[in-house]
Length: 57
Image (cartoon, rainbow, N blue to C red; front, side):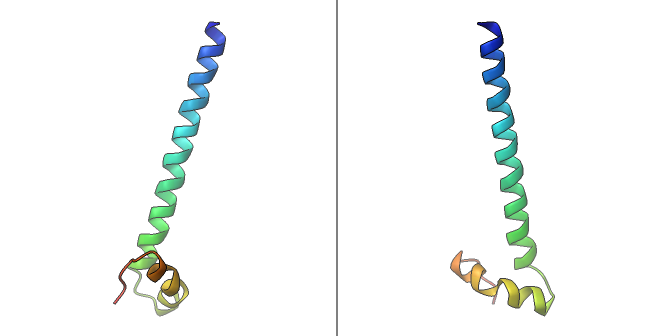
């Protein structure tokens, strides 16, 4: 019984850690491309930023 609850807590902790990590990577990509000064990066992410309502003009 103790090993089962410990295993469940460990799995939940790993899932939360992974979710936070993935969110931070995704948010970083959106904002780094959003504030990029490079024309190539701007043009590559232009349509996706507008689709996400991220202003770029």
